[in-house]
Image 1 (spheres, rainbow, N blue to C red):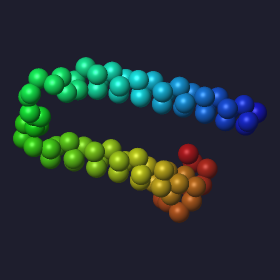
Image 2 (image 1 turned 30 degrees about the horizontal axis):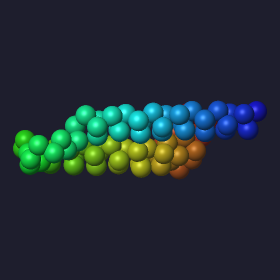
Image 3 (image 1 turned 135 degrees about the horizontal axis):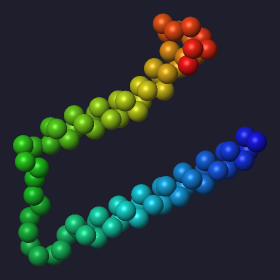
Length: 83
């Protein structure tokens, strides 16, 4: 049972990864350098908003499992087994 679920998860993850890479390649092909002599543009207002969003997303991804483990598997405010 667990081996089948692991195989399905790995296959789905592999398909999702390949699909994401193909989408990325499409964006690079559409918006990449066209050799027309234009210089790279910058983000209006700088990159501050993008950096803040990236830190928030990565922080959520990194701290999410820790928070779940603390809450649901002991060490948190909730009783064990409440999740």
